[in-house]
Amino acid sequence: MNEALRKLALSDGRYSPEAFRFLYESLEYALRLAGREHAEGTDRHVSGREVLAGMKACALQQFGPLSAHVWRSWGVRESLDWGRIVFLLVEHGMLKRQDGDKLEDFSENFDFDATFEQAYRPQVPKLESGPGAAP
Image 1 (tube, helix red, strand yellow):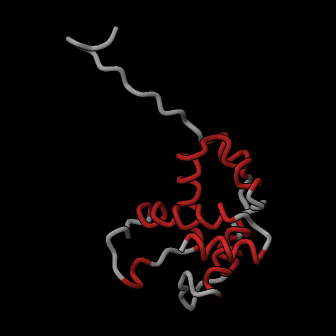
Image 2 (cartoon, rainbow, N blue to C red):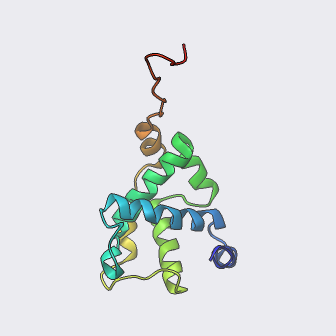
C-alpha cells in the first residue's frame, strides 16, 4: 500500500506522499475518538469531521506545536486539502465512502497554527517517589 500511496501522491503532485501516509495513520485515531475502533464493515465509517479530529490528535502527538508547519510542508494549507486527499484515495479505490460523504465535510477551515499551538500540552513524565526512586 505504501508504494501505491507514493505513486498516487507523485502523479497527483499537489501533496507529498507523507501527507497520504499520515492520513492513513490518523484514521485509527479517528476510529478511537469516535468509539468505533472495534466496529466491523460500514459501522467503522467515520465522517469528514471525525477524520479531521483524528488527524488533529495524531498530529499533536507526533509533531506537537510544529504540526501546522509539517502539514504545510506536505502541501496541506487548509482542512479542505485533507478532504481532497480522501476523495482522491476514494477515486482510486484505496478508501471507501458512503453515499452521504462529500468534500464539504472537510471544510472545517480551522487555523492550523492557533489550533496546534494552543492545544499543545507537553507531556512531562511523572517522577516516582519513595524508596529506590531517583533523586
